[in-house]
Image (cartoon, rainbow, N blue to C red; front, side):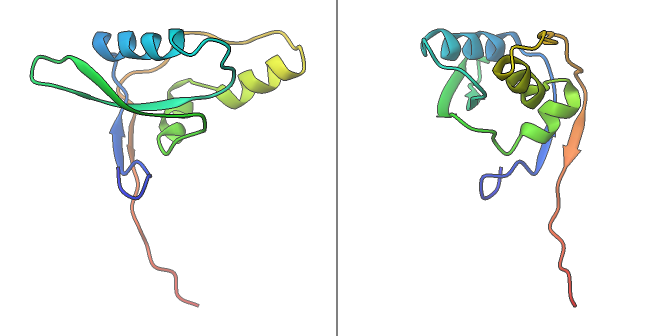
Length: 104
């Protein structure tokens, strides 16, 4: 992460991060919408959450590509449409961002 934007990321299923996400959600009763969090794993692979944001974070593009269609789900819920949510997503998706200069 640089300046709040994800520079390189790979989606993977990690049981301890999944449990951390479930803990974040269960501790925030009444919260609706999209939240993001950042966590690190220690040497024993225990997850430590160190930031929680009620917004779309810098990693949202890779989450969307992997199957997390939060914008769609928020719209479906807002307009009482049938929910298309699925817990299925794709592991192994890679994202790389880079800076470029544009001259005119």
